[in-house]
Image 1 (cartoon, helix red, strand yellow):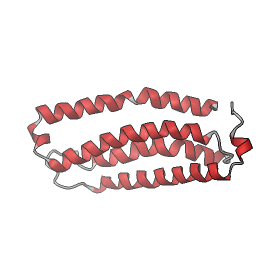
Image 2 (cartoon, helix red, strand yellow):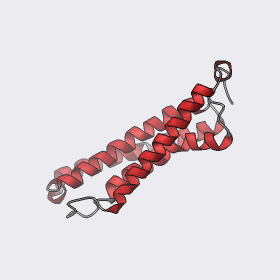
Image 3 (cartoon, helix red, strand yellow):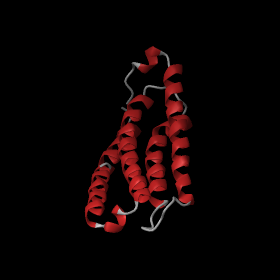
Length: 145
């Protein structure tokens, strides 16, 4: 694993416990906050935000293992490494921020952050996938440092 991938993986692993804290916070809201429990739109979007954050952080770790096996250029490699972590911020932010108000009955314009995150994620995954397909097997099997 390259030094930059290892560094980003370390940061992601340090950040991942915040998702655990977020899950406990949502559970506390569900149990102790009648306003949260009475708003199904807010519940659904916050649940989606929490789930996407956790899954996308784990996907980010997986992607890092594959990026180093490609012969992508410097910019494409940077984008491929960071697209999933960036989407792990944008997607949940869109879900959470679009219904901050306990009275919200529909998402506000900040829901578009989720769509932006989906586009970034898709582009990053396509970049890694195409990079892997275009990398000769002999080059991919050489460990990078």
